[in-house]
Image (cartoon, rainbow, N blue to C red):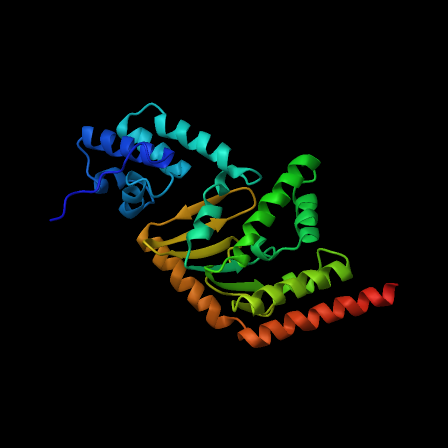
Length: 285
């Protein structure tokens, strides 16, 4: 058996806390399996954290502190890291941009809003305005900047394979004035075609399906780790890597994909909707 690879605590902040987690776990006499017991997280994530390859999500930090009796040590570290990294993102979203950058595939289900990676700036700003009318303008600017930074993923040579399923209502019920809505739909088509990604539309006549409860779902595969699922609601989100739950979401997404329109028919529908909005805008001039 090859010798165990211990993290170099001086290599990075993540490596330091990974080494600390391993030290405290072994001091408590627990295996990875025993430490993971009671958390909806797989041992693969704990192993990656100990090697300094991943940051620790807040829910896991709380679990670890309770299990190891570390008096909130890992929770405080997690809060500090999230504050330093989120820069325009909600705290629960802090780890997602890094996961997106490292993913080999991203598959999204968008039931309520166009996904952030496909949004134009007018759509971002209007979404913030209607969802958080109390938001300070400077905070809104920060959110927009952070979301646009995520979209730089499309300009990378090595980017994830991307697949998105949109509810038809997202292209039929405009959040923006006609001309801006046309630009938003054109942007979706342009990104999908230029990056050889895939978009599908779930017809509004399709009511029942496995992911009908309303949350946004994203399945991400990673090069050196098991797949993870991101589930997001209005003011909350959770990263799931517990294998049985990941498998359930994987099956549900595949069934949803089968119920959606074919990719080319979906893009044609988006283009047709964009033409309709542009015609409407011309009629208003």
